[in-house]
Length: 122
Image (cartoon, rainbow, N blue to C red; front, top):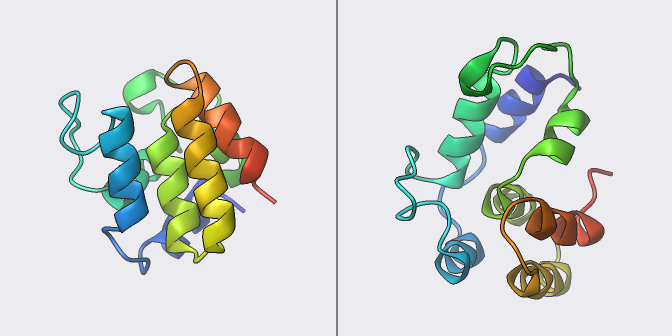
């Protein structure tokens, strides 16, 4: 799956989800924190994927990546969590994942690693 195909799958998903909002609040990351440019994690995804076939804000040099690569390299746990919540992942898995992310020692890579250990791309 390409990043643009993933973007098309994300477009019809709900925008605001309660557990994602709770995670943003607990981590102080995402909407309402750190001058986030997006109003929702859905908008974050759509904006991120819209420019994935070019250098984007991060100066990407390899623009021929698939959606799995994108998922595995995002460094925003609420963004990844939103996708799973929007796809109706069972609540017990979401709850376990939420706890693991909040307990992770640092932002970014460690939180996302904790999340991906419960919510891998597969």
